[in-house]
Amino acid sequence: MNLLEKIKKQKKKEPDKSMSVQEIPVYWFETSDSVTRHYQFQPDGHLSVKVVDDSRPVYHRVVDSFLNKFFPSGYPFSVNEGYLRYTQFRALQHFTSAALSVLSTQSLLFAAGLRPTPAQATVVSWILKDGMQHVGKLICSNLGARMDSEPKRWRILADALYDLGTGLEVLSPLCPQLFLEMAGLGNFAKGIAVVAARATRLPIYSSFAKEGNLSDLFAKGEAISTLFNVVGLGAGIQLASTVCSSMQGKMIVGPLLSVIHVYSVIEEMRAAPVNTLNPQRTAMIIADFVKTGRISSPADLRYREDLLFPGRLIEDAGNVKVGRDLHKVVKPSKFHELKELFAEEKFILCLGSRWTDMVLEQNASGEDALRGWLVAAYAASMAKSFHDPSLTVLQDAYDKMNDVFTPLLSELQAKGWHTDRFLDGTGTRFAW
Image (cartoon, rainbow, N blue to C red; front, side, top):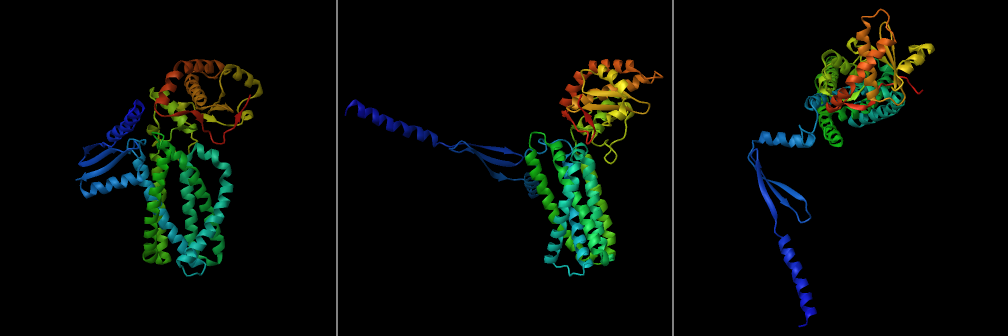
């Protein structure tokens, strides 16, 4: 045997040795909370996990399975504060909404003089709902900026409008001669409500995303909605065939379900710690800082927000109104003085007797709005000792703002606030 043949044989034997090493499985067992799991690395490098022994009570195993299917991975550490309360009331909201939809469809069919079979209910529901939903999309197309600014408010209004449309449908058997009018108006209101609810869904989910897990949050949230919609449909069918088989029963159960539905939505929105800056939240942050020196987090402000009338002025924040037309805010003669004072800023402030107007530049961010609001708050406090507020007050307030703004901004960002944008709805902005 020559040297070349020996080398070839050695090369053939070496792979066999390496293969024998790779075939040795790498695995281990871990036991935690009465659950033993088997971990093993597969030949492709992936880690497989199998439950070997689970000595927990059946109740705990069911709860764990439910959490895995309907809550984001890593819950509760992967979501922001308030997610559980939000989910609880979201489930109740969808349960009552689904039950109401069964009663309204039954009433529509009775009003139309039809026997309420499942096939007819499906046809009528799809024709009315889909047709009017397209109209609702057209009407809501100009409201997107307002929904971004106040998603909680618009979500509540959407569900109240949905219940109004459902109420018209439930009452339609009382005046069958007006069936088309009542059914059309009811589904028109519901179509607008559906679009508004969908448009505000993403900002609400985003407020809970703690680890960039927005898709997981969305998927699990929709799973819970689907589950309780199905349960609600079953309850609605049961009610329709028993208590609500008569009009008197619907008149009692319908309003009760509607009240529970709207209350659930309000509690959902109160639990959501929205972390974007809009006029109301910015004013509350500045008021807390000026009054106490404390920086509020999104979770701190969620239960203090005015969900129905968010435009109220806050005295400790300078009674600031943002987004009014420039010609209504300041005279041309005074505009140049204010622009010189705030030459390096993307805002202009004009002190008034009852409130302070702030006009933002077109590309102003949340940081610019915070700077302007803080100047207004300091100026309003200083102006109490002057009979005629002047540019001197604004200058002093501006200097004071510059002294404290950098640490304020750092703390706000550490608390989870998004300061890169300012959502002022349809407020007017200018470029100069």
